[in-house]
Picture: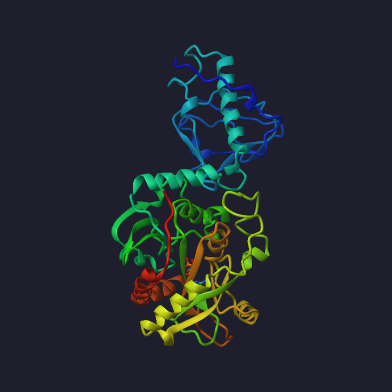
Length: 421
Ligand SMILES: O=P(O)(O)O[C@@H]1C[C@H](O)[C@@H](CO)O1
Ligand SMILES: Nc1nc2[nH]cnc2c(=O)[nH]1
């Protein structure tokens, strides 16, 4: 029998900081019986017979238990990973794996089983207490991703471009491409929205080293804001200095038409009004201050550059500078909401960007925001128009060339010093 790790005493907290949650699906490969019970009883679905190929729910279901881990853990075994889709963290059960037998008749004593089970819970408790379980990534996790990227490409981008809905092809502009699927990058969330391919593409755009997010993360996908904004801090750690956030947005301003471009002058962070700010929680001083100002969120010089590049390209008639209002989505706005936002001073409305910008400014990145107006917000009760994602993607495709020209012209004009080692 392989030696089993014994649980260091200090790993046992007096009480677990929060309920332990294990996805049932993650346990489906377990070969032996697991009995779990907590002081305060079960939370979530009650299951006491998870094991073998027992019928476990194919959809993620959580079991959990609260309180001091005096659980009856008969055996925890197998070769499965527990992956919490909401946090993206992963706990390997392999370390605690038992021999392949179906029961404890291989010589493993009750005490061995108890020890192994407790060690497992101690590990889970430690994980539960770690920063990434407190609703945020730890600094080390951002760093791990940044170091992984720097080790896997020789590109050292100065500019990061976040591609909005239907604008993912902007990444194709990059020369000498090195691309990574999000699922292959440590700690990276996954894209779930059509029109967001889920690739990080490194390369040079008109001579400027860039990295493109071909697909971003949105609040409405169910991601917490610290996850939505994860890539921004990673960009900062790999030496990026300027972030260009692009998005598809509904035009609220009556002068705006589909295919128009709005250089973002300012934003209204609507979820922020309701306490949904990506900087909520303990401040990570290594990224920035507790109370960052946002009155200079969109860099004045970059805005001027974007406006002059657009004019040079002959886009003056399709060009605006305005206020973007970020909402949670995924439902599009009612007529009353559009009228309300318009009166508030918003020129365009979308479901992204503001969180990325808050985090980018917190860590000192310069920001340029560009909205493509993909639909006109419905403001009239007699209108038959209905906003929909297909029309958003179509408008993106139709204006692709214009956006490409703008970025290609703009990029070489951006002054940057890449001071990463
Ligand atoms: O990622 P962006 O903000 O460009 O995408 C917008 C908002 C929703 O994700 C989608 C609605 O069609 O487009
Ligand atoms: N919230 C919102 N997001 C969009 N993204 C593209 N168009 C729209 C819109 O009309 N409203």
